[in-house]
Length: 142
Image (cartoon, rainbow, N blue to C red; front, side, top):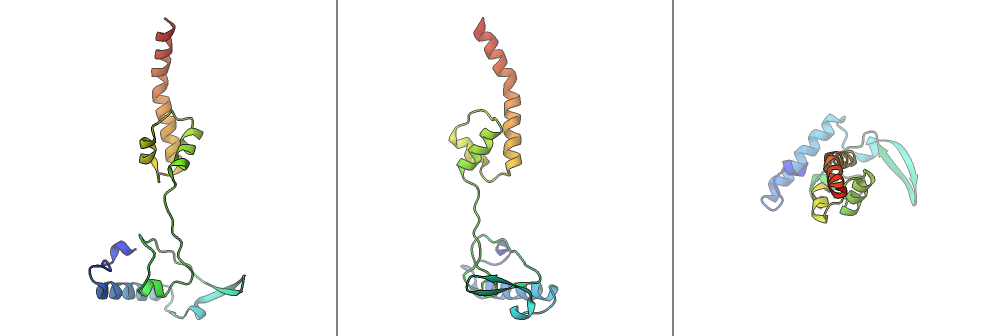
């Protein structure tokens, strides 16, 4: 979402205004109630008390965790930072699909891709290399 807004570094007033308008439109579309206590429909027990759960949970994807502005001020829960899977996870997926040996640089190109895509690529590469390996083996036997 934040890529649609002006950078805080370029114009903080404009960014504040954009976030406020965004939040107003979002609340308006969700029923118009800006009071968190009135938005809740269910309460869940957690350590240290009950937590209200909004009727609708809105998830915003941002490049950085907001520290100020309307989005940060109106968050009900703490933000969660996500990252791409690391190279070890990519290697595991590749090897699980019986992909051929690759250098570490190659795994960097696959980081962040879906598991099904990594497995499919590993299988495709293996299938493409199979005829070459069989011809290499037959040449070795001569």
